[in-house]
Image 1 (cartoon, one colour):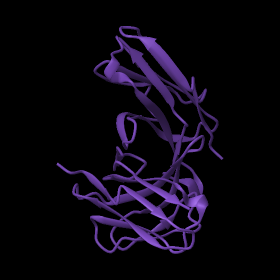
Image 2: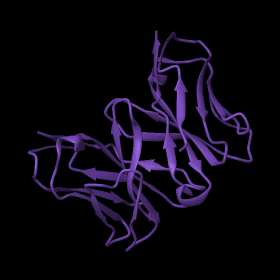
Image 3: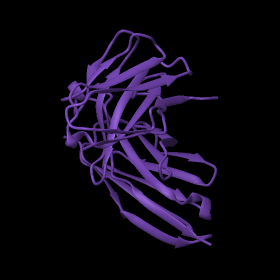
Image 4: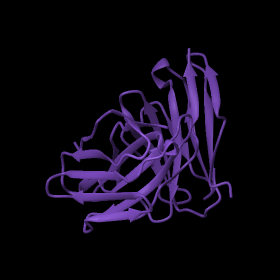
Length: 114
Length: 115
């Protein structure tokens, strides 16, 4: 049972380059989220989606874009990477939303921007 | 803004000890609180979810309590084992206004259980 799968797991970018992180879940969950985890900062919500075709901004959305064209996939894009975006990115999903449901996380994507 | 604090930041104990991890939050208007476990280089695994109307939840050797009015939660681990070594994070879900449903995470307690 795959659960939440993130690709790629590791990536090194140069400042100004673009890239897309892919999150896929096979649990038919409605809600999906992108977080970043930084030392000493905890996890912070970047963007989230409450269903196919919807997206919304989280706590730290600047510099990122997202799309949810298919229910099972949630893409996080960086149009022009900056060193401040060096972080570990986690995707999560839930069936009932944060007000009621358990969150399932992927194993993370470690991004370094030089 | 909701702030979540976890104390201690790190804890090292011998196998077999019962231990308590603490989580405090500044805004008592929460919808629920979750405890997660994170192993090095891995994602988070949900351990326990406590709704704001509940006082505690139990799963095996884990027991989490919630005192919403005082803004505190504790995670109790009985008879600790080396396999319990990980970082434990708590997160609260806001229940008001534009932050409805958003999770706020603490920075975690790094637990090491040695044989």
